[in-house]
Length: 229
Length: 42
Image (cartoon, rainbow over all chains, first blue to last red; front, top):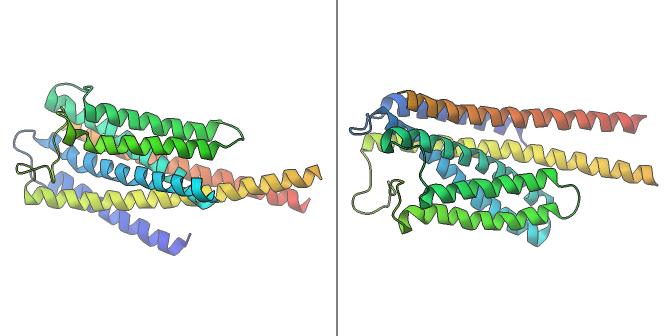
């Protein structure tokens, strides 16, 4: 990792996140019916967006790993899975916090919410499989599980388009009645850019750690081989 | 407002906790690296 480039990117992300926070809390107007709680949208949706970037990236890296057995692809797969899970967790926590004052309930078993919870469980299983099983073809099994995860991610994305759900319909590209106030749009896109940068930064950091970890594992294996001879 | 603050605090809490976990991972592998180099010298 080029540390200068990483530092510059981290600083840019910090500036974007601060700007995003300002826009979300002060810059954007208060929504007429929901009030201040609508501002959760500026964090909830960008986090869901980063999750939707990470899981397909994990899927592609898993396919590449299954085809080529490349350690770098495996490192990228585990990094995107972990960061995707972090953002999925945030989505599952911030959604009910918005739902309680707006719907009057914390949770409902509709298609969007349920499939998101299933997605979270699939990636928790993926990471547990990688972390707690010893030896054997673990990355291969995990890569196969990641493929199911990505299929569910497509279902999560489509759930509010294909079914009638309690979860709101798409704000953008959801037909004639979708869309928001231009000042809200500004706050929304600043946060989308900020969280996308944060997602890239976290994957970068985690990928670097995984590569170093792979080298250490390799050195341990070499040492064990040397001891055996 | 309390729901809004709760959502933002949870978001940052989860992200910061994850960053700390990754940084601790760096410390762990760097310690392992040092041990391996020490063993090589012996």
